[in-house]
Image (cartoon, rainbow, N blue to C red):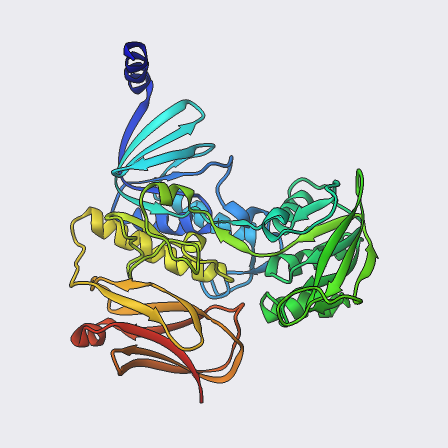
Length: 428
């Protein structure tokens, strides 16, 4: 016991220690935007486990980023570079190849290039992003040969490493990355036999369905899934089948498809192991942190933004949310944060979830509610209510589960009523 205590004290002495106003965990699009905004009023450090900033954007070489933020279509690396230049110009400390091990009372323990570092922060912003669902998580049976990749992994192999994962490809799932990779494989000369989607509607943005599949004559098979993977050393083929209303394979509809590569685009999960260890309350629907209108979590002084809160379809929305988190974290550090109380925000008719999930009456004039619907609906009316009183409303020509919906509401009106807030979507 004495030896163990001595080693613990010796290890603590060896640790590099630093103090900072705001520590941002994650150097992807959310972390960069949050850090850039917080640096206007506070000292900031970004802690990034990879060897470069930018996160997933660095492998997204296709255009389509920045239309709302910069008014032009950029590639992922171009979008990331704009913010990397911002944080460097602002003098933000950057710690690359550094992994956060734990957070305790706003003290961050991380392991980096030069060993263990202890960072005392007045506020923390969690911008840890998300991870892909794997074959094991969706329980696809069959053998375990080479040639099975998540869509993000396949994207990195082609765009960063210059390696082709396969020449005859089957894609499971019609999420945005899966759709984009169907086009990418085709442009590289591979044959994409088809994209298979278990649901009755595509899982990605409609613009990606059109630009990535229709424009390249790549078939989209709705209500289909993979029920078996064949192959020994390398994938030789898959068995696909139609599914019924309960998403169960229909006997007699099986079909063998020859391929040497299977790409899985079957959903994303917020990366929140560190947040959970810090005691942050999680949303059972999104899998991300529960936040208020200023992106602060249930733990005082810990904020969250981007895909660590809920999975976004547009990086521009990530940036808007992250800039709010950075601004409010700086206010918290400088003792300028206000709170009027606590109101819950509920998901109403045809709303799967809504962010923020609570309101604390912070110094924010307009609250931005973001949510996804349960089912597609045309000529829809989006409504924000406080009690029974309508605070804000807008009409949408169409709402779809894959596409995030946003609505702004005046905070003053909500706090005058001081009743539970409900966001709902109804047919006009």
